[in-house]
Length: 54
Image (cartoon, rainbow, N blue to C red; front, side, top):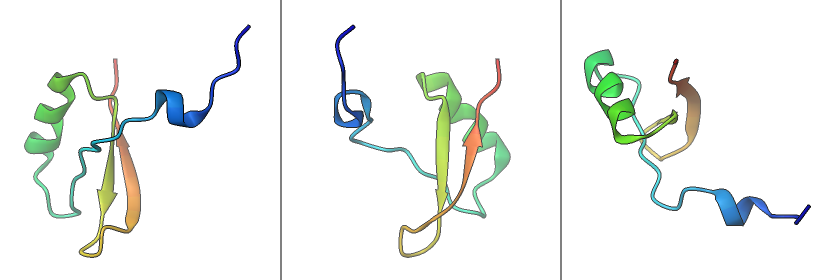
């Protein structure tokens, strides 16, 4: 088994949401083959994560 680093599998252009982003907008992002969306504050600091379901 080949060892890979996080750098090999991470997303470089991360799609984020804000706490006030409507749920419908976040749900629509999951149609773009995204499985999780970080929620960030005004400074881009992480506040949480929205994870898509099956």
